[in-house]
Length: 398
Ligand SMILES: Cc1cc2nc3c(=O)[nH]c(=O)nc-3n(C[C@H](O)[C@H](O)[C@H](O)COP(=O)(O)OP(=O)(O)OC[C@H]3O[C@@H](n4cnc5c(N)ncnc54)[C@H](O)[C@@H]3O)c2cc1C
Image (cartoon, rainbow, N blue to C red; front, side, top):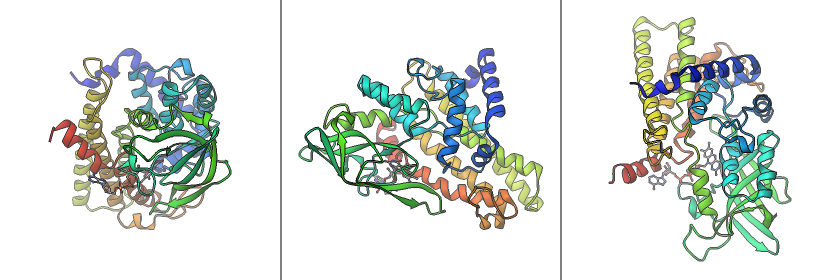
């Protein structure tokens, strides 16, 4: 029996068809085209438009329960939903508000915080970013030193946050701040949310090395944050951060996106022969495509085994590290093969400001940017070296 048979019941097939048809009929073509170019720097307006289309259908925030306005999908439905979104070239869910902060506020927020924060995320009106990493605190996150000093009913922030994805299009930030330095480094960290329009906040762009603007450094100069914007207790933010970081079970392996990327490469090679490969090159490419398909298939089976355990326990432990390492490696291999197929055409990679290529052989040019851009997946969400440490200790017991 194939573990993926669980997605082949009549109900699940009907659900898959419903999502597929909906995406085809409702995804705006300009957004579809950018996603098909593997762009991760989708403008705010594109993300918001798609979110509101899903909201009107009742499918916004697919991981949320009905009680908080989500669709209340079962895990099986959510898996199938996210697959169809990827295969239909639609944008992913908005990770920071919807995927990270929302469920954390459901678990740790006051009623007032739930009312204020969750509504803005659900309606797609408030965009969030994550202020965890700092110039000297990434893998060793608990070393963070961006300071929040308690002054009456406010905290006063000084310091900076680094690599803040979407900081330039976000309205608010959730972050970890140092409120006490006297004990263990995991103690004395406080979880705050703040309006990025507050006086004293500066968002400075950092361009990734292939030129896209996704990340920023955010500076705080005596920024005042009301105490009511603290999640949980003072100095106890580390526990909340650990909860937040454990939330992303779905999608760690990047199977959906990789299936979509490999599908695009195959369709392109079938329909065109723009690079005039010699027969022996075609054979080599076909062999490599087949290898990647098999690797992806094995990864998908592993992912389903981990996510849907026989005993019904849906917690994914250190195995998630295996999914992340293997998934991001395969993803990189797909983009590398795509770029190799394009050969010299990949070197002309350039986009005009609407995201549409302006030079010939569009696919060839599109191939280099994702190859370089997606190097980042080996680093963020816990670098692959750190994941290997976890596997060594927690899985292999070394
Ligand atoms: C594109 C991108 C987007 C990001 N978005 C966000 C965001 O929105 N919000 C946010 O808070 N952060 C974000 N990050 C930060 C990301 O989480 C950190 O970059 C990551 O945790 C690594 O930290 P670092 O960059 O400080 O590198 P370091 O921790 O300084 O690591 C440098 C190198 O040393 C290796 N290394 C470190 N420690 C060990 C060890 N113990 N054993 C073996 N090797 C080790 C690492 O693997 C890495 O190769 C983003 C990063 C990138 C690249």
